[in-house]
Length: 212
Image 1 (cartoon, helix red, strand yellow):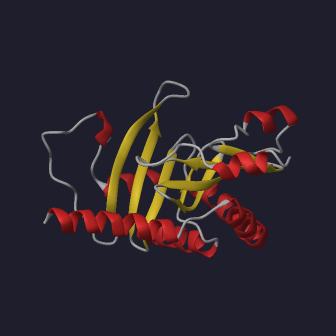
Image 2 (cartoon, rainbow, N blue to C red):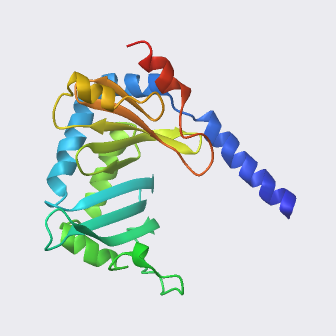
Image 3 (cartoon, helix red, strand yellow):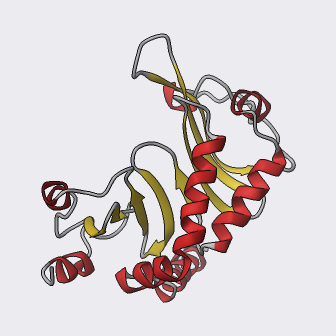
């Protein structure tokens, strides 16, 4: 049994490694899909209510990881409303209470409550998925900057950060650390978020930053 588990873990890591994305992929995808990426960004900004924060990753067309923060009466302060992984929004079942409930569970476990507050429907989730698929991406987070998750690199994720203005020379340096972030051009920064396994830094960013 132990050998079987080890084999499955090894196989998952191997498959993930075979599909690794890199900086070259990020660049090519943006240049090829820049118009559609901008449309996705504008669409997401439009559907997320003011002062709400939403981050969503699609595991499949109807299965998501979803985190939602809602505004409070205190300016610039948000409370965790909902945080769940492996959510089937087409056939959602509210999880049962657990002895391990904590502040990280959010105020509600009801997806219906979340959809009502966001004014979303299942069609919204489906349309967002289609727009992400169209730009070869898997997730998106609201805020400033907006983050669009492009794909896995090892156990981490390579993403685009889109600021609402072109970055100054100072801001370009602040967002290029030869490790987990690299300024690309105009208002775009590439970023790498590490998973539980592997290095937080990737050599691509150091190599490409040194070329600038």
